[in-house]
Image (cartoon, rainbow, N blue to C red):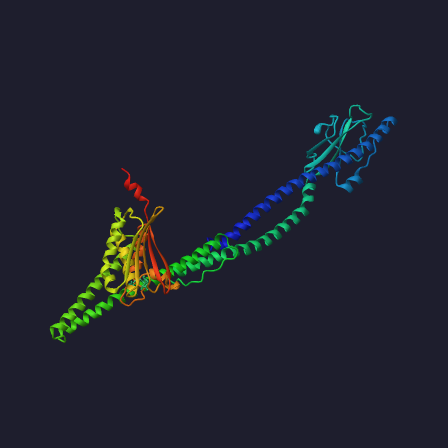
Length: 467
Ligand SMILES: Nc1ncnc2c1ncn2[C@@H]1O[C@H](COP(=O)(O)OP(=O)(O)O)[C@@H](O)[C@H]1O
Ligand SMILES: [Mg+2]
């Protein structure tokens, strides 16, 4: 549970918010404490100033009249403000001052000329006090005879902080609550698609590719991930379907000739075909179907190797003119027999570096298809041309053409409109062309004919001619 994003994300959010809240509170408290201390000192200074004036006035009067005691009663003031008022200094009035708390002479520096602020613990007191000392003089600019000290407990600063602290704590708890809800909501928004994707991945790993990959609104990285994931699932599903189709097609294709062979072998064994003519016919069928089986197995193997990229291709000098002549000649006899208008047009006769046998295999395949689909008396043409770095061999015919929805399908294995065909020819030709660095292009108009064009790279020619 703790390793789950659903827990970690909000926890991380909250941790961040909590830490920043604590730091902000600490800074606010420190600032406020300084401020409260300054406020308290200002108040003490004001009080000290007022009291000093009062005290000095009375002291001067008492001094003039030669009184032995100075009456001064700050007790009410103390009660009202909570401040303690002390006196430190020389015994100007031997019978002392009433009201002020005397401090031992050397407990504070009362001889200094200036107003001072300091912290101290008065003798007999338990707490530390914040104090302002103001010198007392009998005449302006004369040396002070003592000092008046107004002090207030330091705890007053902290006690003024208490309500603030309470409010800050309240705000903090409220903030954390709101932030927690927000974090929970946001992290759910983030993790929900991730969890859904992870569930979908589980489904796929269990082999069910038709899983519903969730739509992630707003795009972003997770949206991208979901899209790619959906693509992947559909590709996997397609691949699985293709594999199944392939297996079924292969077994079907193998079974048809095998059934024929077995039928004839049984007939021969049981002596059903008595006369030599029927026997010869049976043997002929067996031989023919055997050859077809051989071709089929060879093709399937070729295709499997090509698709697995386990195919060694030669790198040899290939005279394309000669190669096309060879391919062309192979169908001359059929063209003559079926009255097909059979032409060749070589605009160039380049030499390229490729695998000659494989190139010939592709061209023969295209020609064989053209002858298969062109009606007697039709037209087939073989063209060879070379343009900027590419060699093109085109096979034109005026057969039935290929319907738009079939144009992609005919390059797939076992897709054939013809019962006697295996549907492997174009699949192999296409894979071979790609393996040789080229492609097969199809231009066709249904009812008018087709043009299959093998395009191969010819760059390496320069390299070949170099000394
Ligand atoms: N020249 C062509 N004209 C019309 N259709 C063609 C032509 N060549 C191929 N096709 C279509 O493509 C299909 C697949 O061809 P191919 O892979 O060679 O398999 P097969 O020749 O065994 O049927 C053919 O069954 C046919 O429908
Ligand atoms: Mg074919």
